[in-house]
Structure formats: structure tokens, C-alpha cells
Image (cartoon, rainbow, N blue to C red; front, side):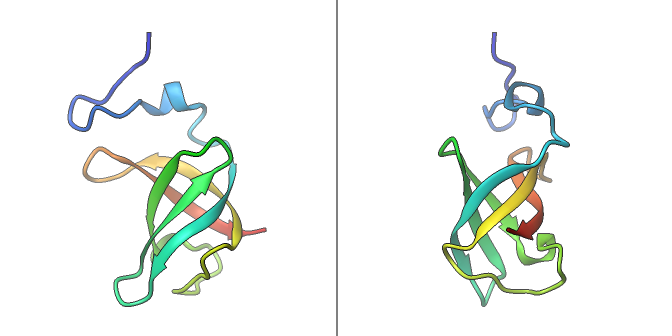
Length: 87
């Protein structure tokens, strides 16, 4: 049985795998003006992120950049990418 968040209907971190585990993916989109972007993991799931989640301190990242990241629950109950590291 899959665990789901009541607020968003998304799967919980336990059903996604260990929240501390690193995932590989690619930057799917990024908007410099807002600092918001998305990454797609190897299974095809897409996660939003803010530029403050880029680990090297830069505030921009190119679409298509291969990255590693962790998934964590965001403020609105949705899962997001954090600790983004370029591969």
C-alpha cells in the first residue's frame, strides 16, 4: 500500500525511497528571473527546486546539466529537490 500526503496526494518519502539517498537526474528547466527550476530523475519523476538548493552557491544552472540531489518535503507538502550538485 502506497503512503500518500493528505495535502498533495503525492507519495510520501518512505514510498519514494530513503530521503537521504542521492538521486541522479538532469535539469529540465530553469528560470533565471525567479530562480525556480525542475529536475527529472532517472525514473522520470520531476521535482521542483529553488536556486538556493544548488550546493556550490551559484544562483543559476543550465538546462540539461546532469546533477545529483536529494528529495525532501517542501513547505506546501510537495516533494522537491535539494542539495543539488553538478555531476
